[in-house]
Image (spheres, one colour):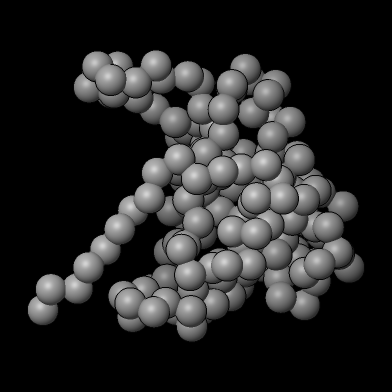
Length: 160
């Protein structure tokens, strides 16, 4: 079952965000990511505030009264400089998508994406964007199956 975020599930949301960040740390070939000291207590609150302040939504996948997946998205805000070289369509941004490792490959991620895409369509967004960690090959394949494609590449080089 997919529902809109409810405060009673905050602890489950915190756990899922930690699970995702721990996974990112484990595949980070640059060794730059970390699960900071206050990550669990602060990240979910930060993300949910961003959703509230940017015409966004957070949807939860619930099984046996526990959150097994979540998606968060916001509407992109543009500044004056953006309009100098960009058409600036009304764009939704997927900021988080997590499905618990114990429930992957059951279609939950697809259901969450469909729910978020429907929301953005209902408020007249014409495009969606998201960022995916370059080393997260499973996520990249998932997004390609959802018809997302690469538009920009963020590159990094260590210079120590």
